Length: 254
Image 1: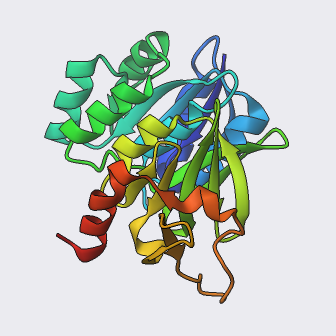
Image 2: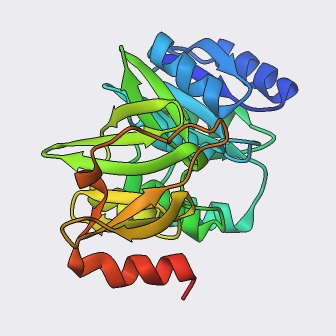
């Protein structure tokens, strides 16, 4: 089976490679020092298992695992971590595979044999119970067969059209696999629903204004490069009467 090693510390990656060299039936096909490289390499190398450090700067192991799930044939995940009481309790409670650092051969063998794919709901529960943020800092889009990570702070809105959701951001727009409902739940602190098919980043809303026919719409702020976050039909930014009070409350901080 093909294994990808992910750890921000080079000695840890080298140690894992050495252990895997002695494991019959397992081959280390590559290693990565951060979550973003791990996602890219996983898409290229198609490993069966990813040995994933949980505490990394930038995109941590929980978020990395979430994005790995976006692949057509996602790998199984085994977390590697220094002793962390909350994380270990969370792993045990959710039957999530892990090995403690420093990694011992016998423990690694057992973990590899029990490696499993992790559902997003499981990852969110583990993150919460381990005192880690359960909210991603990026959303993932598949573009021309490659996974593209879009930072949350660059996103102005999510808009649903039938079974597709489009994310609008400072560099354009992309289709994503997430449902609008799950996005609304995960990013509730940063985005507000303006109608049943659109979520808008509160920080991107400049004001609410009336249209000529008496409806209310949001006007987006300009991005740092002085261009609109996205060129969209005004109808997509109309606020339904059902959501108008909540949009006003979020803008005033009430």
